[in-house]
Amino acid sequence: MTVLVTGGAGYIGSHMVHALADAGESVVVVDNLSTGFSAFLPEGVPLFIGDAGDENLVESVIARHRVEAIIHFAGSVVVPDSMRNPLGYYRNNTMTTRSLLNTAVKCGINRFIFSSTAAVYGNPDQVPVPEHAPTRPLSPYGMSKLMTEIMLHDVASAHGMSYLVLRYFNVAGADPLGRVGLATVGATHLIKIAVEAAIGQRAKVDVFGTDYPTPDGSCIRDFIHVSDLAQAHRAALSYLRNGGASMTLNCGYGRGYSVLETIEAVRRVSMRNFAVQYAPRRPGDIVTMVADTSRIRSTLDWTPQYDDLDTIAAHALNWEQKLSRERGDLVQHAAASA
Image (cartoon, rainbow, N blue to C red; front, top):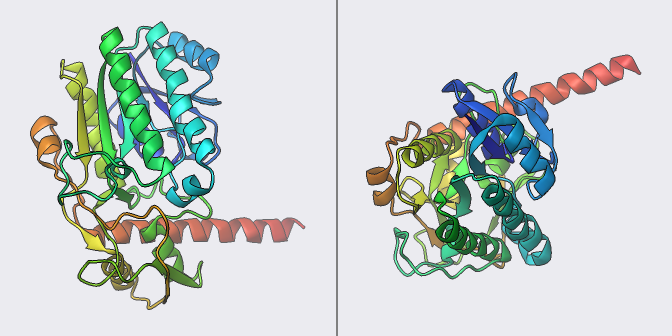
């Protein structure tokens, strides 16, 4: 039986596809390549270029490949963009998932893993934040994900589907083997931006807000290595296959680092002192977000391997250096061919 990964050519999705392929799973990908790259997929993994909300496409993929579970990554993920374009986020995140779930129900798929976000909590009343905390999103991005969680719960209750909602905290790093990483141009992830500055791809790093009620005035985040996150999804799949009950789980390490501490980690591993510019707060930013991880650690057979900020930064830096070399080779090749 096969696992369908939507958004499987994107940043987190491609790590998931590699983790499944490494484990000998049969996997198929649907991705519209708006932010993904077909070259990121392991050799032999079928890619269907299209939207996860295209019910005819997804139904044909499920039938052709005997899909038994869906892991749903496809969606838009940038908080400031969602503030400017809320309807785009409700379309790409909530409406697309509605169509995907409709197809899953029609095709009898009863295992579904959903890529959600800690942004559903807003500014939490307690830190670390547990899964039962109130959900008060500060952005259309967070709200679009929360709407989808509610919809998934209702669909599963009506149709006997088992699901896991995984609420990601701040995903960072890259495949330790250098096969895949974050390659989206103009990405807004802090560690990505910092390693780009470290190798001269950016002139500076902007820090949005230095007057928050935190020890150094900058926001605090719980970073999780993307490869550990992929393994959490593999453990989630095993849990559902073994008859586990539907559940919502935080995906983080339970440890927070400020924006300024994170920048210092990148400076440390790169041994380069790049420029930092301080800017006003951004609408939708959360002050402190750290996961209570007791539920995921007690529920899934999952032990993080890369729970170290310097390791996460080093893997991101190695990937960025590889990207820079490859882009340089392409420029040289184009010049030679001109």
